[in-house]
Image (cartoon, rainbow, N blue to C red):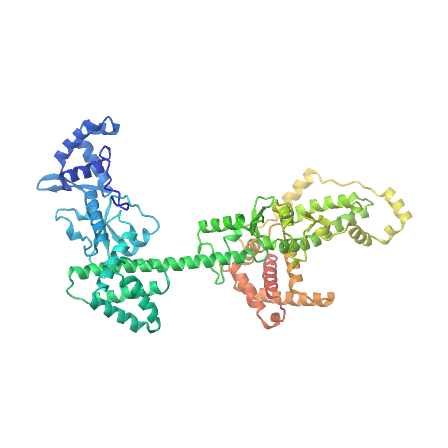
Length: 640
């Protein structure tokens, strides 16, 4: 039995009425079954096999009523139908014909001269309306991924351009159908009159592909034992598609078509539909591969770490979403491979860490140093300012803390502050791969090192913070009187150190006051809508745990390389002024629907390409700065 068609592998002992009908039809060698005789057979069949199949007990009583009830379900499933024939009730077994024509396709697979079965091959009394009509242009592509080769159904396969339909059992595999069609086309091309004619036609339309055409004919057509063509791309695919087109053109011009002419047109239709599918599949595969390359490139860009929510929002150069050009399974497989496969004894190229909120982030191993350098720079300024303000207020009240002078306590203090100020930095420094990364930290081009002798550097060194330096700066801000020891000591004796605590009632009053100032969302102005939209979009540009101001400060240091403080400040202000004027103008054209992440990025890119901005070399950092600054302006826009 042929492995690709299994519906003729029937188990006789069964309670399946469709199988019993087909078995009876094969036994009497006719698909048309007398209802009365069949019901008597079913009752006897049930009596013999009821011990093996308990479900057959339903046929022991009123077998006719039971059969009629089940026939309605079989008719809905297109497996059998009840018809009137000369005042007699007849059951027609559809699966009988499916098996019959499936065997025809098996013979065709061995002998291409056998024609495709047509609807005219069915008996006149066959109720043809019971068969589902499938359009070849949609049916053939639909079964390329998944096909039920055990289905007992029979279809009518329709073609365009008035080409007669064929009967196609659902169990016939697509590759067999295509091979049959190709073998029919190849058979006529082996005839001298067709062979030389179409060879000459191919050569005349492809003068630069003489060698490719010669090889194509030698490999696929001139070899007698070659039955089918397996082409998926390149010259072979192109020449085969063009050859099918030329054959179809010539055979469509024939007025009085013979059975062989019709057979060739049907084979050409099947082959061309499959060719189109192959081309689309090839293009989709190429697009998928390119999209995955773009995904890899995007993951290596600033800010270097991305959550899954951010990854599925990546766009290609033309602004289209990458997710969709590859499937969810493709994305999962890509991330799985990148996060698990790597060189022996080394970490994989893509690493994963989780922040306290539960969000998982992906970061390339070779970008860890860049990311940590950026985060440490940002945290340096933020933490230094926090400590400076805190210690100043403590000194103002004549208080001291151990971390002001004790290095170990200062280190503990930094751990706590990093966790609150920069959760991403804290999670990265405490990720389980950091220790292993220490053994791979041997790149001589890296100037920012995390490890010393395989151990992570202390936070104070990573952040480049010194407690004595911060303490000195805090003291320098104190009033002059604090520099006089005796007076300071006397004042401290009378200085009240009581801390005023806000009562619960005060908190409630404050809360009510704040709530009373919350604007109603039912009547928002255009400006308020843009502000809300800007705040929503900012989440796509500002990493978790960071702020717009912190990101702007970091980017400013990337594009503004002027050394002197005054020149640096002047350039920043000039750029900010340009962005403010530009944002003021373009904000009038923005609406809730047009105000998108892509729109802001495009506006920023347009401004950076203006003559004044072109003088700044660091275009990428400047573009990101302009984008963020525009969002910041729109977030803080005054309400009208």
